[in-house]
Each structure stands twice: as structure tokens, then as C-alpha cells.
Image 1 (cartoon, rainbow over the protein chains, first blue to last red):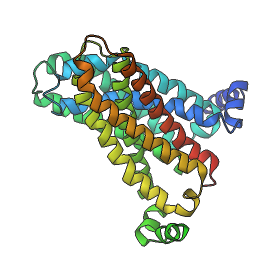
Image 2: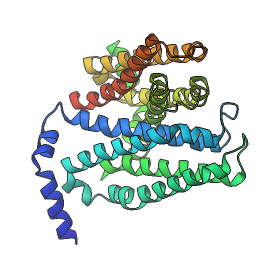
Image 3: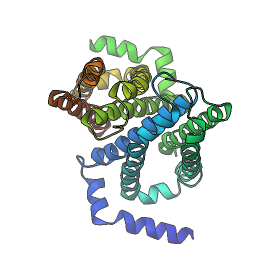
Image 4: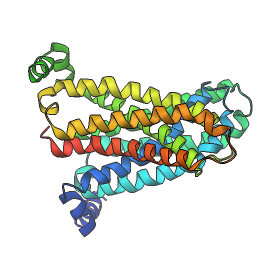
Length: 161
Length: 159
């Protein structure tokens, strides 16, 4: 399994597009920009809903209304983040696959946070009809914030290995 | 000014924070999370003014919910950014790429403030004026440009 992963990583890294993106001084920051712009859209809109579940901004709209308004760009943001993230990974795939912080982020934390996000988004119509959210919604919002902060923590730790 | 940078760089707690992998990672983490809040919520309000997002709600409703997080993000970015700057102040201060980043952020924040102040006017009219859309577009480009300017700093400086 590991040998197969190493081969796949090498193959990806030697792909002409990723060789070029990694080699050109001007290109790499734009790849990072794609990842960061997507993440900003994704996390900015996700966390805003979580804070609303916790009780912020009650006078503007219900949690359900806010979540519906942000929904489309929330997922567009994730799409852009994945595009940028995949490119960043592919430029130096061999270095990432054995990095424990990257493994933790990709294999455990992101799937957990993403599953929780979908759960919250599906439940929000039940929880978020009134200005005040039920206790369970507050706990769910708090858990989502913790999960995404964990993802970001693992990401920040990647260069330390 | 360079002398001031040198003494800033030698402040004991600045040295401690910047030389500990654990502590500086937390500073980076707060800086990144601040960027995400700042840009994500700021850009969304601009998209709403442009008419491509959240059209079932008024601009005031959305900006009321989102702008507090834009400024919370800014409040996270500035002190953490200062700590990172202080650690290598003599490298950053004279560098053109760093000065461009600071200028870019300043202009982006100024446009963000203008958009926020104009929102109540735009809600009183039936169709959003073209000038408002242009302003929102400029603000959107400036927020994303601020991220790019930030990413260009390590690309050009030997850190």
C-alpha cells in the first residue's frame, strides 16, 4: 500500500503542470492564493453560521435564514479550496504523504469536520427557526468551530515535520 | 527606523515567541483564522452587493451578521502579524514586498469601511446602483489581493 502511494505521489509530482507550478517563482503564490481564497469563503461562511448558532447577531436573521443565504458560496468556497489544496499537494506530493500532521489533517480531521458540517447544515432548519437557538444547536455550533480549528492547527503544524 | 526595528527584534518576549515552534505555530494559527474570517465574510458582503449571493435577504441583514466577524478577523490578524513582523523587523521593514502588503491591506480595510457605511443607503433603493456594484467589486478584489500580497512576502524574502 505504501509503495503504491509513493509511486502515485511521484507520478503526480512529475506531471508537467505541477512541475511548472512548483518551479516558477511567480506561480506558486497563486496556487496558495487559490487555496486561501477558497478557505476564506468556506470558513468565513461556515464559522459565521456557527457563531449565529451560538447566539450572535439575533436581530438580523434566524440561523436557518443565514445558513440558506450563505449556502451556495459556502460550497463554492470548499470547491475552490480543494482545487488549490490538491494543486499544493501535487507540487510536493512525496513530501506530504509521510507527514504525520498532513495525514492527521486529511484522513481524520477533515472527514470528521466535513461530516459534522453536513450534519449541522441539515439540522439547521429544525434548530434555527426562531431568534433563540436551542441548547443542542449551540453545542453543535461549538463542536464545529473546534473541529475546523483542529484542521487548521494540523495544517499549521505540517512544516514542523 | 532600522535601529528601532533592531531593538524591537531583541525584545526578550518577541525572541522567545518567535524561536519556539509551538508558540509561533499558535500565532500563525490565529493569523490564518483571522484572515479566513476577515476575507470570507468581507467578500461575501461584496458578492451580495454585486447581486450574486444571498439575494433573499437585504444587504443590511447580511452585513449586520457578517461585518462584525470581518473586523474580528482584522483584530486577530493585526497583533499576530505584528509579533511575526517584530521577530524579523530588520528584514521586513526595508522590503518593498512587505510595504506593498501593508499598503494593500490598508486600502482594502478603507474600502471595507466605506462599503459598510454605504450599506444602509443601498437598501433604501429598489435596484443597487452601478456605482455601488463597482465599489463592491473593487473591495472584493482588494480583499483577495491582500491575501496574495501576504503570500508574496515569503516568496520574495529570505525568511
